[in-house]
Length: 169
Image 1 (cartoon, rainbow, N blue to C red):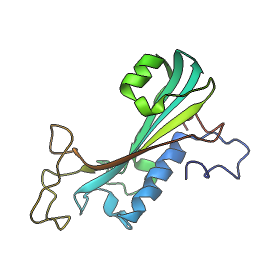
Image 2: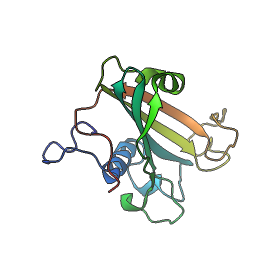
Image 3: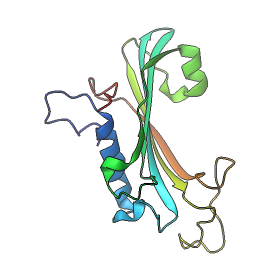
């Protein structure tokens, strides 16, 4: 979806609103109704994470991190009201990128990479019976049980030129 969303537009650059719609559409495989929103009948909500880097030179990278999630307290079951975060573009050294995001190291100046995360987080302390898991409780990857990451998947792609950095619209 990231690569194809703006094919018909003259301006190919993605916006934060585009990423929110992508997260919403991506969650429809499990949540094919408004069950992705408060009060979360399955006990889960989905988040999309987007880490973009561009190599400026051998030791300098631009990085931007944005995310969106179907979690919100407003009980407004609308993609427009989903929680989201727009990250500013900032500069990092190659060693900082390699330490934090080793899969995002680029080999040529001007090369870009995008780490896309699809993450399911707990909305409640216990979700096993809501998911039909009666013997085990899905683990969490953070100390807090609520909002802990239960299931996640990350992949790295080379985005089409001109899609990033994301605009705050």
